View 1: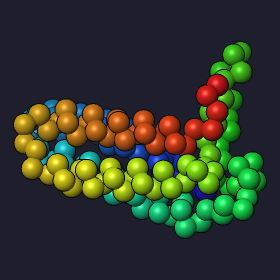
View 2: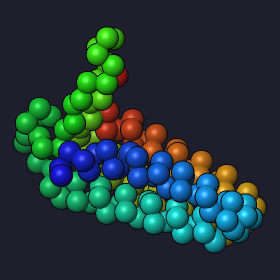
View 3: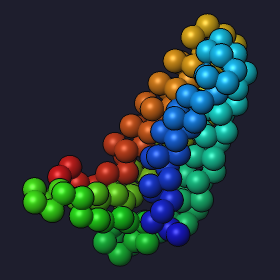
View 4: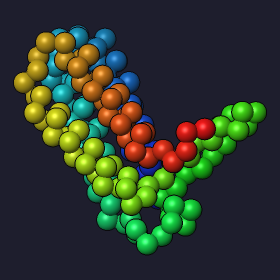
Amino acid sequence: MESSILTLLIFLPVAGAVIMLPFAKLYGKENAHWYKWIAAIATGIQLLLSGVLYYNFDPALSVTESPFTVQLDWIKHFNIQYYLGVDGLSMPMVLLTALLSFICILASWKIEKQALGYFSLFLLLDGGMMGVFLSLDFF
């Protein structure tokens, strides 16, 4: 369970952006109410997960000893791996990113024009920022 938190922190906002697409078909692109709530729920859950991660994080452990590490082979032919983890430097950045993302969604609550584009792209940006702070190795 511990290592799946890292993957959820990255892909939860991305899933929120993808979930917005059926709502655009059902309720129209200008019905901003649904997009705001989807973004707020996605970033709120992300903030809670990062709080759990911060609470259970032990800075005395190395990255390889930490339960919050994911290392999977992705493309074996090129020796590319999916390698996530947190260390003493990235942990506060993960928490800060989750907190600021949630605050930014709440601060942009009055946006009505192009809400689908704004909130979906913001969630994709949020997933990318989390990926930067959680990745341990670039290939």
